[in-house]
Amino acid sequence: MKKLLLFAFLTISLIACKDSSTQKKVEITFKDLDLMKSKPLNEIEEYLKKCNYNSLNNQFSNQWKSGESEDVVQFNDKGVLVFLTYNHQTFEKLIIDLKKSTYIYSGKKMKNSLEVETYTKNKEMIFLSTMINPEDGKKVYSFTFI
Image 1 (cartoon, rainbow, N blue to C red):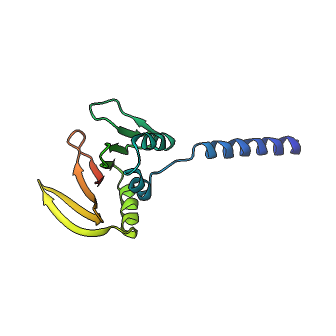
Image 2 (cartoon, rainbow, N blue to C red):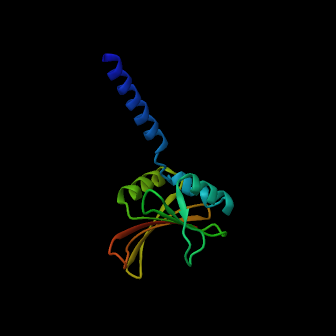
Image 3 (cartoon, one colour):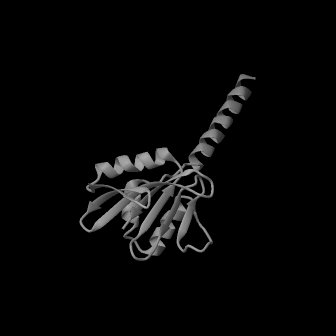
């Protein structure tokens, strides 16, 4: 009986470990976003697929949504990349990493009742903003890399 219980325990443990290792959540980091903007479109798409993002078939080309959250990445072939999230914690993690980077804070400005913070490095810029989504009333946090 002890051997049977031990065998059952080991089997359940192995299955649990296997399931948790295959369901590894992939979060996009600030460094990933910063590097992504300068890559060719096909490399960005491959990376997003690896991170469990799915291409959205809508009017906006190159818009991808996470399969695990409501995060969205949109980009074009001119080096502009936008990351949108409803998750304040995700936004804060990205800001912490941004502040550790070589980007320099350039200040805040109000434009069309939207507060925008700017960071610069060489000729690159990052705009941070928070807005309310008119469709659902939720706050949307954005990083725009130019």
